[in-house]
Amino acid sequence: MQVLDGKALATTIKGEMREEVDQIRLSGGNIPHLAAVLIGDNPASESYVRSKVRSCEEVGFHSTLIRRGTEITQSEVLEIVEQLNNDPDIDGFIVQLPLPKHIDEDAVNLAIDPRKDVDGFTPVNVGRMTLGLPSFLPATPNGILTMLDRYGIETSGKEVVVLGRSNIVGTPMTILLSRKGSPGNATVTMCHSRTQDLKFHTRRADILVAAIGIPEMVTADMVKDGVVIVDVGINRVEDDSRKRGYRLCGDVDYKSLESKASAMTPVPGGVGPMTVVSLLMNTLKASKRK
Ligand code: NAD
Image (tube, rainbow, N blue to C red; front, side, top):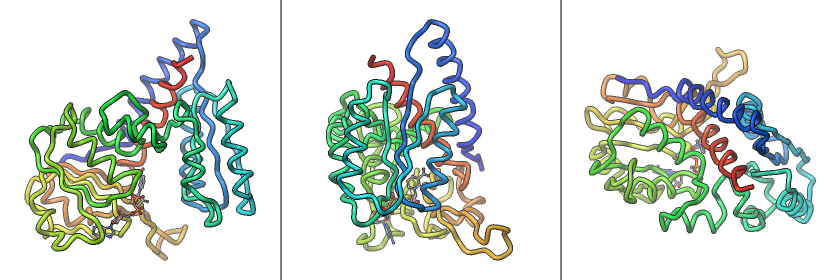
């Protein structure tokens, strides 16, 4: 089985970006600047944002982290978004999800200037993506496309099954893999929590993308020999034998699938690092607008 090593690929792509940023600096151009808004103290969000900021530094971008506590009001969040929209020094920004329950995530998303929406979550970018027009593609699905492309995994004419219908992974993944292009041109089935007989669908998959959030739910009996598996899930499972008291695992039972899949992403070190790279690629693109 081939391990689709997102960590190694992300390092390669970051090296390429670093060279590009060095060239931009030498020619006196605009150095990309990403801002991240982190609200509250969700440990997973903290770790994602930390990794995004660290990656910016690695490739030579400027980065700004805006941190606020859970007591922040809706209008204060919208004010931060407005400031970032209007700040000529910021090329792109993200508001890390999930937000505290009293904040309306849709209202925050709608307030983001699509030209700075490097997460690709605003209606303008989602609409443009759906129509096949140039846009900021959502980071995780785009990271997966980059990975499939760089590893030379053919998607044209293949049966792809996507598990999960979230706005940030499952739905855009379904759209991107079914549209014309490469990677693309696949026959895509989207499954979700109301799907009856999940196994019927997953067993037909040439490529299976799991974005569910249930630890190790996909097992060997659910797939056919030679399947390519992209495991998006990042789950914390209690584990007293680990110093930190938990281990990270995906939505796929990696061990049982190792002998059946032809290629698979590990967790951690698969889709996660590619998501961060996509965000950097979008920020670089946004910075070229100037
Ligand atoms: P979500 O958590 O918003 O929703 C889960 C989805 O799974 C829903 O669409 C639901 O319909 C579906 N689902 C639930 N039970 C199911 C079942 N039994 N069969 C089939 N489908 C079922 O989705 P999300 O935000 O896309 O997150 C999914 C997972 O991916 C989480 O573990 C999350 O942490 C992870 N994630 C990872 C990255 C990354 O960069 N690697 C990025 C985003 C999300």
